[in-house]
Length: 139
Image (cartoon, rainbow, N blue to C red; front, top):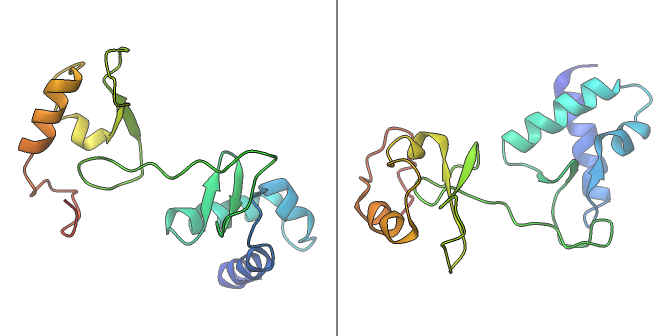
């Protein structure tokens, strides 16, 4: 079985369960012809490509619904470049009143160590739109 056909099978299964987020073990239970490791690899690939969503250790297409009685958490994005990988929340202390700002590792390298909320707002406004990893259509 090729990787593409595994992806297609898993996507068809997730499309049949649009309101559910299921763990890798729950999904692989329905595919006796695939090892759990293969299902995990396909799910990770689909998530990385932005085709499916993840809620903790569970995956789904994210058409609403509930996951074990809890509302799914929204996907966080970097405040500067809109990436979803390796996010850090600033400021680190409890001085922020409006909530923390999520910034990716690459944008964090451009910040001073442990910025305050006021300094963070000023720095984000001044950050160049030409960061090497920044999407052309963001902010």
